[in-house]
Length: 382
Image (tube, rainbow, N blue to C red; front, side, top):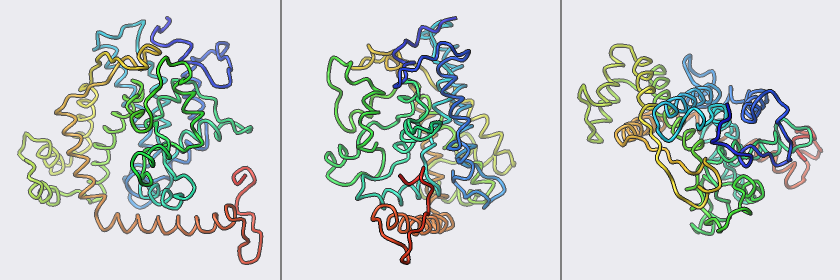
């Protein structure tokens, strides 16, 4: 049965390659190509909250991406059966959403967001470093292609991964300082223009960070699936690792003026910890977060170009507030703890030493100890 939600505009690839002869849909091809890349497998050793190998029960970027993909697909199922804006012939493709969710962290470096901040600092003179921009680089230039044209993603897939659509120089001009995050590299303007088909628009798109407001419905689903996994599953890891205890949560709640009664979110979390049922607590909450979403029509410069821009995802305010509460708890009690900060410093130190060597050898073109060491294979350094 043909899904009328997508047109040729959405399934087009920059190379013009026609996938109609394949037994898979264009979005299944995108999903499969991501799954079979080394870039995806490398996520297994990248930090989510705790370093790989540091604790017995931890999530890595790989397991996190798999969980986000499952949540994203479940959101698609929920919306298809609950929204009167969708039907059996007009629905959001779960294979597309799965591909986007699996890919959303491909460009993140080792050592979590601390590693990303360190690399952005080191790259300040060269246009910065950003995980989302690096994901775009991998998809369009590096992975699945010996000719370095990337995996030739469909427009809907590439656009769905682009959570941020501002160029580094645009944000620098707007804010008057070097961007800390949420940007694309200036050299990626062509890929950004193709993903959004800017040349086809009757009106010019707004510049800079205003462009970030144009997110496809698949990107919005990925974003909420990511928030759901981040705010809930990271809690379970933090409890298992001993960072979130009843005493620390109660102390934090009292200092921030948050309610911790039995029928409050924090009270439910405390009850789950005392009863050693944290996984059940998280699992039930994930289901609640999935069913908290609805669709509403959207009208913007892009809504007439693709159905992907004609819908907005709305999350129940109470659920959104609960998610923000749990994220604040994890950030202030876990991420800012001396133990995690010590690990972040260790990671930053290692990245700095690597950066100094690579910059000297491949950016400045200098020798190391008087020798021309080939530290990287030719495919990685040129």
